[in-house]
Length: 51
View 1 (spheres, rainbow, N blue to C red):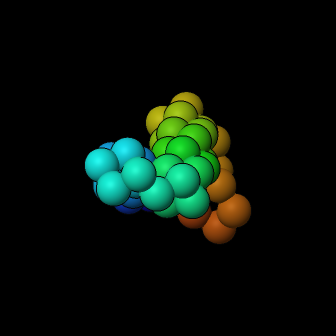
View 2: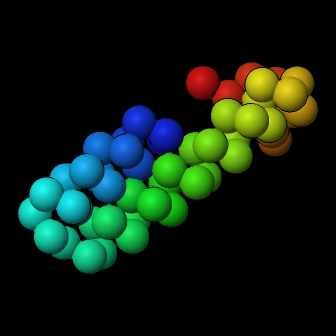
């Protein structure tokens, strides 16, 4: 999710598409939060690790 957010953010900036930039930022933030929670050892729903 983190990588998809970065890709969408870059594509949105290159092609000047505002909605793609917004979706990229949202996915980037969600991916970062899930990564940090997974790295801290917190269980995320039924998954103990988030990949």
